Amino acid sequence: MAKSMTRGKQQILLNYLPGKTFDFQSGPISRVTSIRGFPRTDLNETVVLQRVAKHARAWPAHLRPALSDRVIDSADKFVLIDPVEVEAEIFPKVFRCQNSSCGYVLDYSNRDGVPHTDRCPVCSQGKVAQLRFVKIHRCGAIDAFAPTSCPRCHKRKIALSTRGSERISGFRWVCMDCGHAFALFGGPCRHCEWPSDSSNPQIRSMDIEVHRAGRTYFPQSAVLLNIPHRELEGLFNHPSWEMIVAAKYLELPAVRDRPLASYGPGAARSGGINPADLDSIFAQGLSNDEILRRVEEARRARDATAQQPDAIAQMVVAASGVPAGVWQRAGSDLLEAINPFETANPSYIARASGIPAYRTLTEQLGLKDVALIQDYTIVNATFGFSRVEYANDQCWLNPFPPDERYQGRLPIFVDKTQADALLISLDPARVLRWLEANGVQPTVPAGDDRTLAERSYFVQLFDEVDLYHTFTAADAERRMVFGLLHTLAHACVKQASLLCGLERTSLSEYLLPKTLTVALYCNHRFGATIGALTALFEQTFAQWLGGVRDGRSCIYDPQCFDHGANCHACTHLSETSCRFFNLNLSRSFLFGGPDLSMGRIEQGYFGLP
Image (cartoon, rainbow, N blue to C red; front, side, top):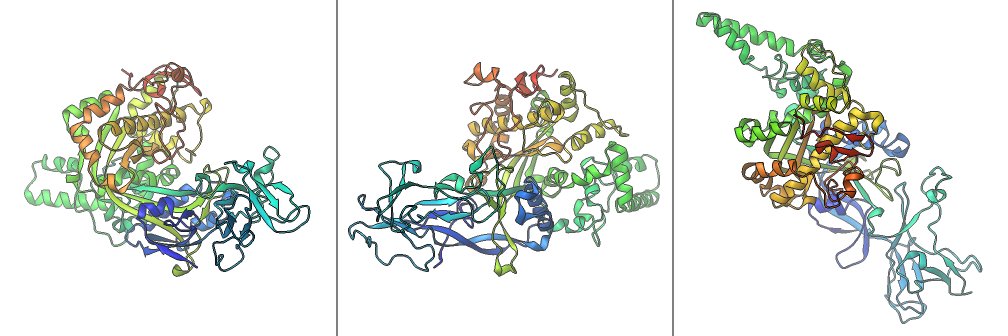
């Protein structure tokens, strides 16, 4: 019979998701069957589902059979749920006599109830307690761990002997009729047809684990920062919204001063023109009536151009030298980079480029800007799970069971918080000079505007690139650029944790390599509301970035330095902070030195003249 319990949203998204086992409030071991909540209709479902689809596609198609492209591309297959209540059932229903001389095992897996008495039916002395072991497989299956019949006499009266060991490998099943002892074995998974592998003959077998072990359940989620809400539905209905976003990212005059929310069928027009165009009109010494007429003509011309998909696409391609297809695929990533400055209240935004002392330090470090954004929206969208492994090439990605309360749609559990965040962006021109200083010759697109072409180079560099693997010297440009951005992000997190009062595991990175941007934010509700990053920006900015600039050493040097300048003490973060498995990191990108893939980075980014 299902029981219910109430937990905080973040606890649910981490520890009480469907299919996960847990110890039920000093009661029996239980398994979550479902989560009740209410639909989130205020979030932009299009953007959330696009991010979920992008995350899911990191798995090969054959390792996500229930999340095929047909499914993840269908908005009507999912529902966004804000969790409120957890429903659970007793699992596993396998019990063992605690009398060490007995150890009889009762299997109630195929029964509706559980033993009516806590006394062992065999010895009548020991109490029976739930067995804490389960069987799991990388396809996502979980089974109760129960004995089979005796291989010698085929009787089913079986006891479990721990033989004084704490390890499962030391346990034995013992037939209580003939006394035969035999080893524990998970057996082949009955829920899938995982292909055999000669290098790993046990890959089709289920593993035996303590139910609370970490590898029994890995939640899979997508994080979205400053997600647009319903105000951008019109933009997404525009036939070429990705190109509008690209033009906005490049700050092309036709769209620079027009809000993204003004696009789409029935959307309001901008009502304004580029200040440079306005200055040009005023400089001509015209009468007031003529000025008004010219301004209205310019406004209409700009609105007409901005509403024409082909015209926008042509401007973007001509200015950048990058094909339209690349920009279309980059639409979501670019929107994440520019949306904070589109939708946030200007009073909640502070930029280092506007503060002389801060600007000097950021320029020395090769940063284009550092921006503090308060009331930054953070959405965690948890959409599935895996077992045994977390990596996307060694396990199935499973969605949560369909929810009959929502016409059988697949639930995605979301949690939205408002917090402060820091957006750090690198200077594209300096990154290109750094590549050249290290013998890498990037090919900048042949666009009409050199500055815009340099920015566009990085959009093209990371087009359709899997970031969840190690880049090698054969892919030098991506390894160096992504490694630089990723290592800088980790250095900023580590130094921030020393100054802002939050634990290192409470801070997370969010990388947008196409725009050379990284966001730092607090990944739990309590820390998100205390203004720690605001205090960091306003009170200890110089100490923070100065500490990043001076953090060239590691306590394990010279051993660490000689072996790639990359270890848990200097560059690694926990999995709650880094979603890229600590890949493609090295202090050598920042300071120069050996790199295991590139050989040696002669010129560190911070040391570039």
